[in-house]
Image (cartoon, rainbow, N blue to C red):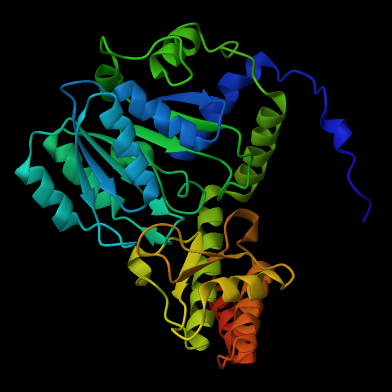
Length: 372
């Protein structure tokens, strides 16, 4: 295969200004919302920091749910801006429970904001967002959701859930570019964002975005847009719209089920029960006799595999098998399972590769037989 000529990516034509609003509307449709959608010219971590920085002020009371390092960062950004933050931390690398959230809301103080990550790629868990969002809505609390690892892999409809601020990035299940993200903002959220301590003339200012783009008629984006990122986002949306969001979600669910059935066939325990597991990555617990670094080195030598270690406290003995985006397909699932089995055997752990692959194939054939 010839080496690509990356010089062709230099000096690209400008992305047409009249298509920015169209992109925002397409993202809104994907998110299931009629709220305003902002286009952020950066990876989604900056979008999350911008939301926290724009919200934070003295007097703001936030319940910040921490189920990974990303949630901890968000609480830190809020505190940096003077907000009073209660960090509700789940058991290490585990999802939060509705009962824990309800108890925290009851204990108070009366919170203005609840922040939560939906799907966690760090540990492969899925927080119970629908019930938590409903609880927050009943209490009149504004909700902010990190849905970067949700959109395109899990059902996520902003308006149906009643989410006030949702942050997404196309680089995961949508298989798009990493250098751009989006934020949906409800009227209730704009009211909370409009305060005297809000940042101005800053990449972290959502009010600047409102003034310079939304209020200006959604023409040219402020700053100097990066055209390659927008062309790539447009192509990713073309692909996901042609497939259909429901179909994409189901494709991720099939890849997750096939992967976990194969893992269990190898005699390796998966990390969380299915109801609390993300469809984007599957996490399993390494056998005690297997050293994590040696395992990851052995797995990385297998062609086509995408296996990594867990991230954050409690995830030190976890391995993550990635079936996100375009990897949510039988070929990638087989490559991961083959690599997992081969690495285990190379380190002295018994593993029946054929049985594991048969379990994965049976999952796909069963879902096909059921009309999926």
